[in-house]
Amino acid sequence: MIKKLLLFALVMFPVISFAQETRIAYVDYLEVAVAMPEYKQMQDSLRKVAEDIEAEMKTLSEDYDKRVAEFQANQETFNESVRARRIQEIQSIQMSAENFQQQAAQQQEEIQQRMAIPIQTRLQKAVDEVLSENNFIYILDAGAIRAFSPSAVNATPLIKRKLGIQ
Image (cartoon, rainbow, N blue to C red):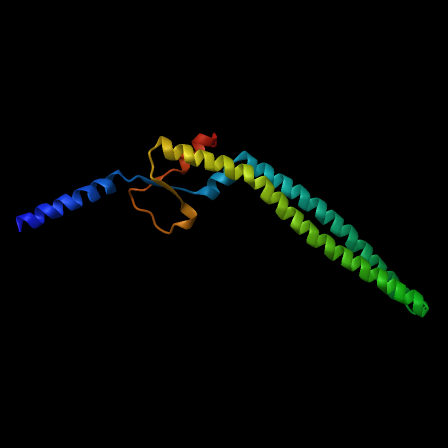
């Protein structure tokens, strides 16, 4: 019996020792990213692009509405070939607006992805530095974790400080 207890103690000592040394931290990546000046610049740039797109869409919509109203007002006076050409023009404007809207959405997504890379890189560098400076084993994303151990450390303030964010 004593041999079993001694064996159990010898096996459990490293496990208990490792568990006590394991330092796990978590960070709210979204909170940190949103607080970064680069994020605000990205949002301002995306807002400007969206405003430009909206202005162009408004112009296309007004042109389309004008052409449709003009067609409806005069369609009975047009001969068949003029009516067909006007319908084709209206459909062309509509297709052009749809294509522009699709291209604009794709452009916005590409701009956002391109502008997010330096933010992600800078944030990851800060996380890596905090990880090594504080001897953490892991720094987990708080957004992906449902529950934390009371022994887990909230590294969000440390990472914000590393980035110079208040």
